[in-house]
Image (cartoon, rainbow, N blue to C red; front, side, top):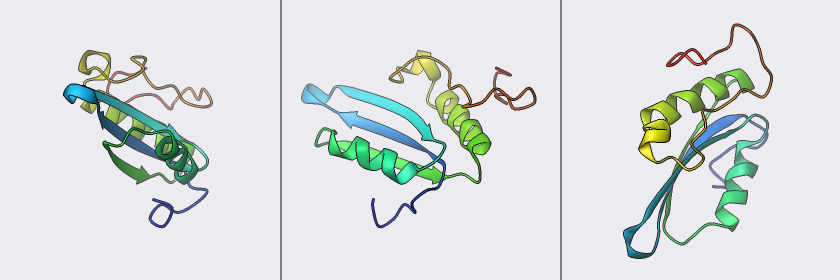
Length: 103
């Protein structure tokens, strides 16, 4: 991860942990400043069976929109995503909302 994800770039991630007895936990998140550091922090405290995906964004606003997309694509609160609340932008900007639900 440290070699693949460039430092000091915003982006989004998806984590899927398979625990004891096959229990699955999913999480969608973002970092508006340094995605690599956020992923490394997750990796340090992660269980042994974690799958992840990530995508860089051009800006914190784009990272927010990508996080919304992933959250909805994975079923949101109905899909069992860890932390069932809809993503929120770092700064409220009137014209920057969620394209999927206009939040």
